[in-house]
Image (tube, rainbow, N blue to C red):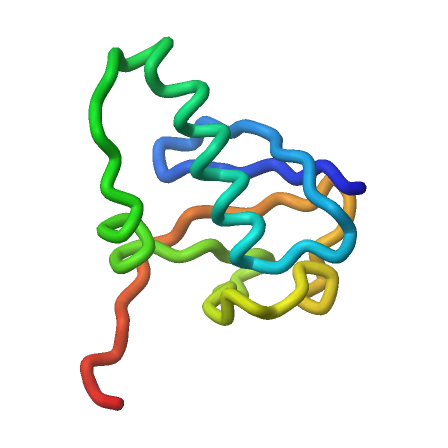
Length: 95
């Protein structure tokens, strides 16, 4: 297993534990689960629209956007003690 630090837009961070075989989608689920545990304590109960978050933000590692949900984290150079950042995500409107 590996421990990753997720850095939020406000500069605060939290750690998540991931399997070495985890994908970007697994990481997103872990972030969601962790945030759902942390936020009520700090912010009171409120609904977080994860669809809105992932439509507008993406995760990056060493300035590489982690866009493919099915890619394995280790294939993106992510290993134990790596930092992953939230970044504004501008989706191309042209397909």
